[in-house]
Length: 44
Length: 196
Image 1 (cartoon, chains in turn orange, brown):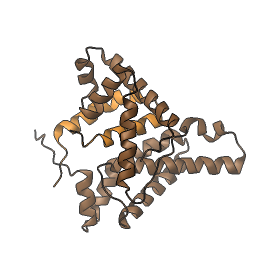
Image 2 (cartoon, helix red, strand yellow; image 1 turned 180 degrees about the vertical axis):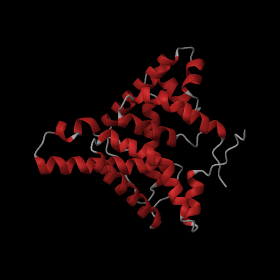
Image 3 (tube, helix red, strand yellow; image 1 turned 120 degrees about the vertical axis):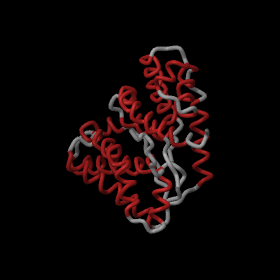
Image 4 (cartoon, helix red, strand yellow; image 1 turned 90 degrees about the horizontal axis):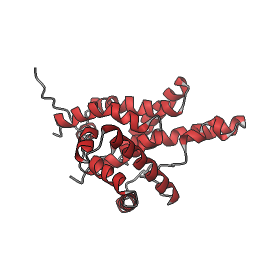
């Protein structure tokens, strides 16, 4: 069974507000951020 | 207070769904629905249209999964966002065609030109080539922008941690991140890369 650890969950909630400053309403940047997060997901 | 939260990963939920647990797909959709709906809503200002596109997006996603054409590679959210993005593009094209409005009125200037591939079958070799291309483009960014990219996406650091690691203010770190994404998007478009 897969789990999402607490650190990941906490980071996600803390980061949402800061990420909104980075994205500033630009949906393509939002997508690119998600894309990069996914493709490097296996790098750790 | 119990802070231990056991949450199934996207992959686990998908596996459960494919094993016969119908509720698993509902949970998976619920998990990502606000982000997908927000993404669509940012581009399509009409709530009714955004809701329609939202429905179309997940209907398409579930159809692909049911037909066994989705191969999980840990990118469920970005896959669904690609579907949503392309459905929005289709909407704008229909709007423009039917009303003879300008591209700006149709929203083209907002949505840009990033067309996103929706592979029906995973072509792992092509996908890895695209990812490798994106990694190479990152190497073309200014050093400070490369650094924030690596710290955020490779090392999974928070913005506060990135600021601390690079000895800059949080605002500077956020600014570098924003410019890194803007510049990376520019490079992707220049190279005509279709993200998948």
